Image (tube, rainbow, N blue to C red; front, side):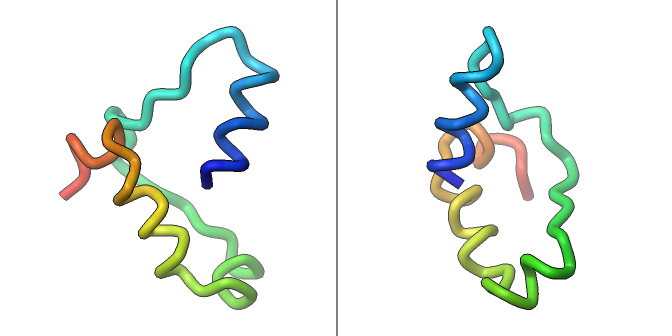
Length: 54
């Protein structure tokens, strides 16, 4: 997620802010390849995402 966030931030003029996210959609292919735990862990480690997610 860190790499993806860095790449996106170079393409958009605004800072990425995940605190308003109420849903995370994970592609079936990615979930089978990497599993969902590393993906969810990356979000959990991001302080802006963690403030609203329950």
